[in-house]
Image (tube, rainbow, N blue to C red; front, top):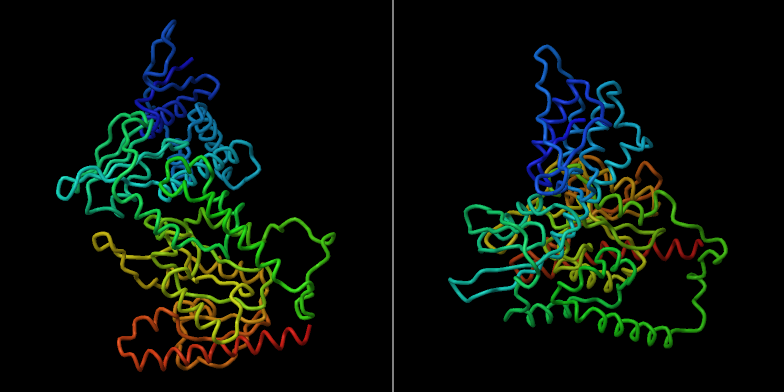
Length: 481
């Protein structure tokens, strides 16, 4: 029996060196016991033996994606992860394409562990809340977080990029990360009592959270799926969540009570309740869940989260923007910032109900350049648009809209699969290969950037005129139904 003792819970380099040496010496997985220093039994502890030396005349290769997968999965909290990874490595020597067999138990288990780690990393990015300790030049920002897995070292670079200009510490039971403006230092984990409970900005944050809370778009189950209750106890806004949900429910009840008893005929198109089926594999809900782990391009590394589309599953109209902005990146919803407010205003003026259209972006992650605490929007490039186009295509196939509205050059490039001039294509319906029609217009953020008031008013009216074409198409479809 070979006893391998790793330096820490996240000692990937140590595991990799030991696993390679063991495999080259033909040591079967059942003959290896993996432990972490400090976690061995105190009594009758076997002497930790160094792995056999690598024979000079032997070698083997595994797919590069196994290394990436193992680097992530090894951060899982399952104590058997080292053995499971070695067993998969052992089998890959003779079955090089094993990772393509998604139903294989070892492959499925390692993939599930890696997915859980990435999801936990995403939750840490989204739910860490800093509290200020001290004032002015002596201030330091401290946060408390309880990760499910060993992700502190993995998640720390995100906070370095996001909060590069302030000194901060993230305290967890496993490991603590500290940034002084020059380097990240890690220290042993601490108890929650070491973290500050409140600061002078707490009430300001709660007021801001309450101001951006939109009861008309509240979906409690979806919110709790994205922000499970276990995170609430460490969030300053947690005290507001239940009252805001209760108030939203009362507002909804009032709206229902004031509504007509029966819908108008054009709206009577819903399937009977008995005909409804569980979401298909390609439903928007399933696509949204799958896209939350998208790594098709590098943009996910700096963004807070994937911002997927939102709207009815079978909407007649699909609005495609360019990419999420700062507010969308934080909220996880499309068009909720200044450009979204401009869009809402224009849709209302054009006679289009936003709740009846599906709204998405060509690129699902926020691309930006940090300038202190401000994140400046950057235009996505062609490789990034192409990497994300699969999600637009799958949304299109799932929703099957009659009309696709491309707002901005990035959106037009995604919709048509090539660079498309806005002015030459604007204001007219264009046939798409799938039988739907497309309409090209400007992005609402373009209107916000116009410095001249007259030009802004003129271009806004043109934008509304474009959206009136959408309203006309929706009315024609309603009459045809």
